[in-house]
Amino acid sequence: MGVDWLDAVLLYLYNNRKYCYIQEIHKAMEPILAIPIIEILVIINKLAKDGYITIEEHIIRSPDPVTQEMKEVSRRDGYFISFEGILFVENKSLIWQHRPYKWKQIKGIIKTIWEIVKIIIVVLNSVAILWLMYMAIPNK
Image (cartoon, rainbow, N blue to C red; front, side):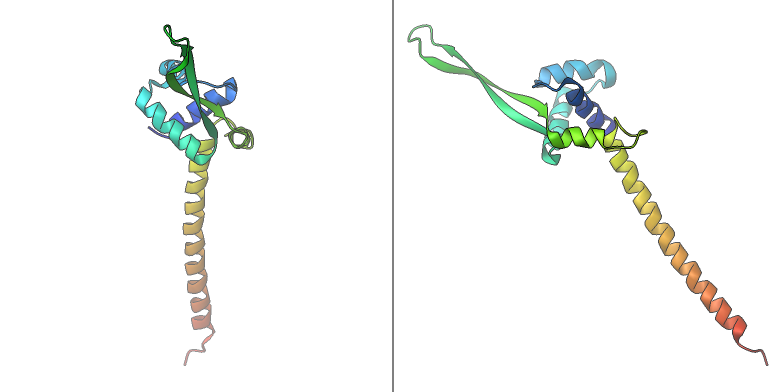
């Protein structure tokens, strides 16, 4: 499981913009990435934790045949992309527009590389200053 799976599920919800059920998402993802249904649940929980999708419980009721009283038959969770999720997908550069989690990962890698480059530059600057000071001392 990786950021490609996160991007694929988020993009599916982004493109459909309706409440989707887990079986529907699994059926759509199966030909593309062959994601097991349990992994889709993990991905959905991650997307919900990040605030990019909303989870709404749908209760299915039907009348009891004897008493005609409405009884709960089953519960299903419906998943829908949130406004934050829409912005997360749309507010990326042209290259990463439909791969927001991949962009987040690459941005982290670039930030780490930049931190290392800054440290190297500071060390080289210190060495250059020491070398210039050494060269400025008159030799006897």
